[in-house]
Length: 411
Image 1 (tube, rainbow, N blue to C red):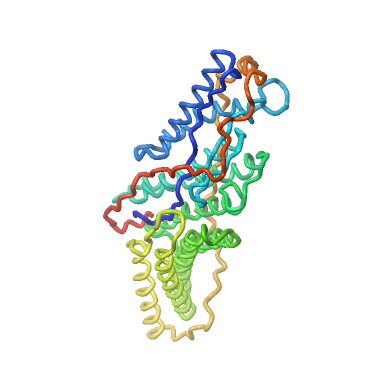
Image 2: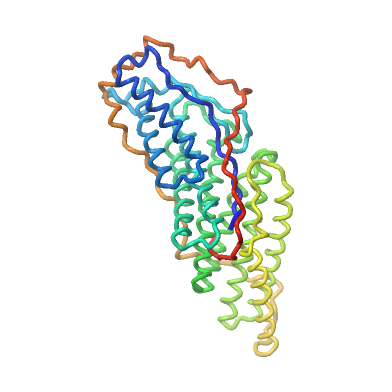
């Protein structure tokens, strides 16, 4: 299902040479610097390579992070800060802030920024794979896995690595809590969409589908509310996407809850629940139109054009008509004024972030080699110290070509 997910742009970065002339005073130290430069460049290339797979991405990111930790972890047998942590300057743009970068002379800033981009790549890979025609069960599992992997990376960065930064993230930047929390919750919600689609395809119990849809709608609502205090100029489009998905899955929840009520001979309540589903679906349709007209960062999803979206509208209409017929012939129940409360809790299928762990320190980064980095022999400050008004070119991402929509429910 091409264009089902909204995606913000990848972060872009200035080149880093790791040319520590004089400081790297041994062949082994120079080799670490050269390998950092090449593994970083290779990883950046992977972000825009349409043939890159999760296995290739993990290998490329592990190679770079294993070396980069030689500039972060204590290597001299003490608990003191690594002497190389603040020797190199790094510049990164943010997914919502255009081409003006943030800059810090801190290897931890590089680690969290690059890992953040790896997480964004996993969400884009999932979106690209979900857009394939006739997606297979294994591919659907890969979509689900990639979204949980992304959520796990975002979560680990927020809880473990971002707090180590000396300079806290500025408001509206990727590394500040509101933005990264939204990415965590959105990734979880989208992973649950795959679960819901699978449950519908296998005709699981209506109460399970209703509960999963309700939990997913709540995730989208939580993500939307997390962005409330962010500058509307950079967040309004993203918020509109989160809102339309919330109402779409609330429509699913009310629809399948209506089926559960009908199965329990509560036809009047079932009718009211399905009327609420119609209302939520109509609101989702209206939000889709508003979203398409919004300006702001990111690709524009087109959910209302997908058969998965359209099928729900028909399903609600047909199920409501069935309930009304049954009520006219069998039950004669009064339809309540208020929609039945959705007090639903999913026991199965909730998507938890996959724990993210950095690779082990590279075998090249030994205490002996570390000792040959001599800070007295070169300037500590990077001559190319960043200016905040100096733009960085955006990443040229591969085009997402629309494919024939077969109406496959695995989204």
